[in-house]
Image (cartoon, rainbow, N blue to C red; front, side, top):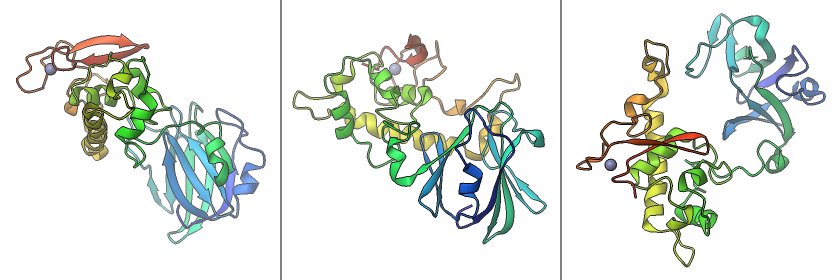
Length: 279
Ligand SMILES: [Zn+2]
């Protein structure tokens, strides 16, 4: 899509989860796409008039690319994507370096949405406002987290799941990062901050573990994701690479630990950890 001109944005209904912005199709039509980006789970389409389309796939949304006879559905999904044209709700008719193509947003359950905002006002957009830094970005550092966690009695795990502290770090990867850094999920977030407000060595290790876990997940996922779906239909999402998540009752994988993985519930979510080596 980058560099292509939107000849026409065709909307086949007035809303997805929310109504489309006013005159959305007219505003996007004729514009050139400057760049594509992502923030948390929001896909960002930057236009040459200074506006950005903010798109979320919801539960069942997907994009399909039709380039003449070639049809591609980028991305790997647990559940098969719908190709039923009755769920094609927004169609970008494009003209670009790759010729004429159509990029089609399909969403049977319509939990996805599209919004449009001035690029300069993205920080105050209701969807993006207050999101913490990306776990893989340069802004995330031990010093940054120390600032956020100072004086916080909140359990470390809940603090890491809070999207205002870090955006896009989910339950699985928080469990895995805490296990790698040998930190107990229930300890207070503030215990990783020194009296002078500096990050402890453990905080440094935690931040390195967060980055490693995400990098490993990307490596383990990618094209092999589909192969991991179990025969009983349950999702086998990266499970071969989990060290602690979903391993209740199994031996801890820390060398020479000898502990057994336990499960507790924190803020309604399962936490898996080793009571022996995570302190
Ligand atoms: Zn252990």
